[in-house]
Length: 223
Ligand code: GRF
Image 1: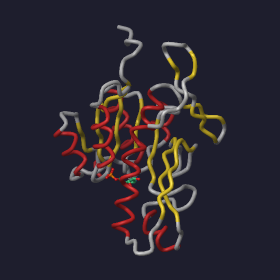
Image 2: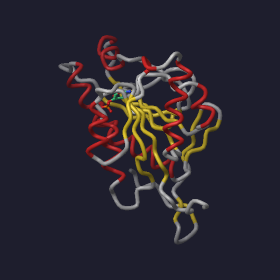
Image 3: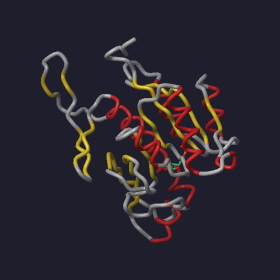
């Protein structure tokens, strides 16, 4: 049966830990008119709190651990099967600590987005917040970008600055960074789900919102 034209896009959220960003998407997806819903959560760790969040929200959640597979390819293949099984349109890497691999990227071309707690290309990797503090930068932030074959590269969709305060620790700065992530990730998903992202080389253009009544472009009204 053909999909309804205005059907909500199905999200597959890949996680490895706490899942506060998963929660932000789940919460937003419950608001009227939000164009996407979480169809499945896949975690690289069976102990991840994110799986409890999925369970609490009534969303199917699976632990697919690397240790249970002979190779990265097999592991990614098993994840891909779960995503397909649940009819996923867009993959969101929300604190997912592994590479998704070419099989997933080829199947979900321009439909895998990642979240990173720094202003890329500064401070890629798993310790971005600590690395920013150590480097003594006065501003850091968040980046949401399309994923590619390597960590923390790929065309940038959204960045937002978070100022570093003199007395900051990893915890205090991390808490402010996460707050900003929780605001922007659901928005980036919304932009994708409403067809407003265009990749042009390394750049991502955000198309203006369509004013349905006039058939013209309406001015941006923020998130
Ligand atoms: C976020 O800071 C994200 O940028 C990074 O991992 C963290 C995940 O946090 N990739 P949570 O699991 O969503 O709470």
